[in-house]
Structures are given as C-alpha cells and as structure tokens.
Length: 149
Image 1 (cartoon, rainbow, N blue to C red):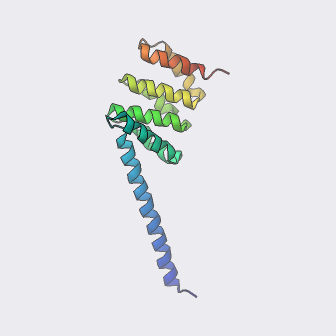
Image 2 (image 1 turned 60 degrees about the horizontal axis):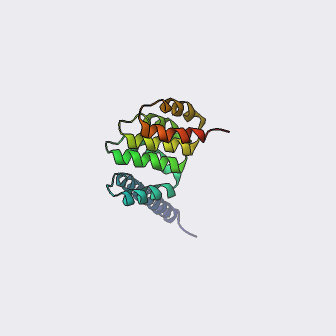
Image 3 (image 1 turned 60 degrees about the vertical axis):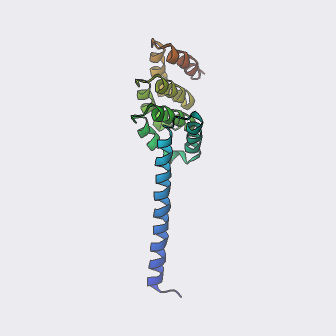
C-alpha cells in the first residue's frame, strides 16, 4: 500500500505534466497564428491547414483575435481558417471583417461566412452586394446564393 504522501506527490507530478503540455500547445498555437503573416503563400496555406487540423474549439478564439491584427496577411489568413473550421462563434467577427480596409481581408471574410452558412450573415452579405468594390461584389454574389434553400 502506498503512503498518502506518495499519492499526493504523484498527483502533483501528473498536474505539472498536464500544465506543461497545455503551455507547449498554447505556444505552438500562437506561433502558428503569427505564421499566417508569412509572405510565402505556400507557408501561409500550410499554416492555415495546421490550424484547421487542431481542435477547432481551441483555435477559434485566437483566430478571432487575429482578425484584428495589424498585418493584413494574418487577418486574411485568420478569416480563411475560420471559414474552413466553420465555428458559428466566428460569424459576428467575420461580419465586422467584411468592413476591413483591405480588400483581401474582406474577400476572405465573405468566403468564410459562405462556408459557415449561418443565417445571421445573410443580411450583411446582401448589403455587401451593393458595394462598389467589384472584387468583393463578385465574391459575395455566389456566396449569398449558398444560403438559398
């Protein structure tokens, strides 16, 4: 029979290991999100794929935060990844991203909302159809048609 002190020490070791694994995973996640800003399209695509393969509940919040990053490529990549994950928690931030100053971010946000297919996005997508920006307008029309039953 093991002593109570031995069991307490074993429990502490177990929780320390859990904490270390959690911290390492958090570090990896932050590194991946920063890599969304990589100038190389191939590297950015690999990063989006790696983020999507992670447990989506854990990456959705950091990706939503990344939609407000200073770097256009990070915002655009975050929108793309959120669309691939399909978590409805991203709908409102993606609707805001449709008003981003950069066309690539707006386009990725529109595409992401089309992939998520949440009814909350339909009205903002229709509003964007009236946008003078032809690049976004061409993206919005087929995306809004995905909502039709």
